[in-house]
Length: 499
Image (cartoon, rainbow, N blue to C red; front, side, top):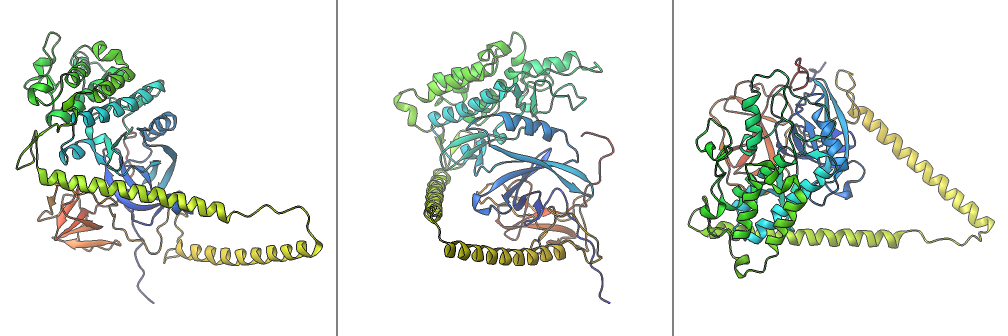
């Protein structure tokens, strides 16, 4: 008898290309955050509809995904990815919730700016679009609570900004999921009032900071400051140097125009207002007013409006942009616009073909011979369909039975041609590249590397990210011109409840 193959293990953090999650099939791996992993997927049976984004929870039974689905399903904005559905992926480690949204082929805001030399008019327009996304979020009683450059995607094809990742979001009436004083968020974007609350209630056993729209607008101000100066304003953490500017009688951060003279007075004034120490001075917490102010700046008719926001230099560092790098980005943006136009044309042509191929309406005057002929054709078609369906079901049955005769979940099973190596689907270049370490990480799988797609490198098991070229992005590592991710044992169910 032949040797039995071990049962395939699938790590929830690295779903393989070809795996099905409900009605969605994984096309590639995009990245991972604190609470979820993002995949590019297609809807099974509707592959022509294109790609979508599936965000799968990092921890089983993560209640944040229910809140994220609640928010996304209600927010109506051209600057927030459209919500398509939610579900639960069953795994041996537990039930992992997920949400599905429109796929946005774009770069993070800071990455977009670092590879270009945008005008301040472009910067104001992007910031206004993010403010409009916040307006739509606040209109349904929601808060984002993690506004930052990494959570804003800019689509090179048309320059549209999208506010993403509502995993830290909240809405009126939602339960508190953590025991911490401050809600989830990124420290560099915390408002002064949030830090003050933490200082006053540090020892309080049940206190929770009540975040507001003013916190979202402050974070928008931090993002705007970073976008136009390439630097963050001083931290609001009292123990850090420079934080004294946020005290009740403090001056606030240096105006952006002092760091970058190319920032116009009007844009400088809006950013300073977003970063006001008193919450009520941030447009009264009204994202709509902030958006309108930014739009007015973007539409101003000053002659210098189309000038570059940053200086030119031989290297790319704060307030400098390398001409060669910017030129490459311009060519890639032009190519993205061309692909978008071709895609729109192909969709229009396909729709036209479907309309032409639509059956013509028959006149309701049929002879007996015609009726009999049509009935015969219908029966024949049904017979062929049943034959092929039987073959398909037989193939599916054989695919979901393991060598030991054990059945695995239908719908969430791996296709026969899939590998367990996660693959990234985007091809955007990056200046980030991590060298593959000389020895495995703590907890990383070591040989024998028996999972499908695993390779042994320097004493550890690794997944190659398909054809993704180096330099690599996110947390991937370069090795001989390709990108790899470390392989870890599957996570076990958490015994501590909600993470």
